[in-house]
Length: 124
Image (tube, rainbow, N blue to C red):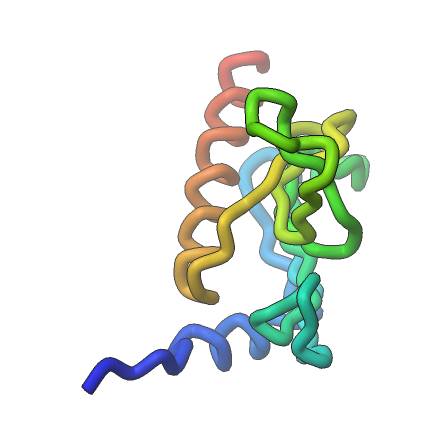
């Protein structure tokens, strides 16, 4: 029997409010809460996982606080909006993110954190 329970959900919820220091004064922050299941948030979560520099500027993040349009390369992109998305840099308004489960979100976030920190390191 297939079980659709998201075992990482409790882990993600426990990270709410947590700030973790990273290299060179960078830090990550987690804002996570249960919310009513809806079309916009079918997983019943409101989340924002962000990476910041030592001055507090957001460098990138994953969240579902607002809708983003699919890129124009997708058919009917003007009509389709997604709430789960990834901000690739501080000026990025967001690109859709396919939310699979909480563990995958955490893994994807930290993979991008590592990539961004490596980019920042090469600029120092």
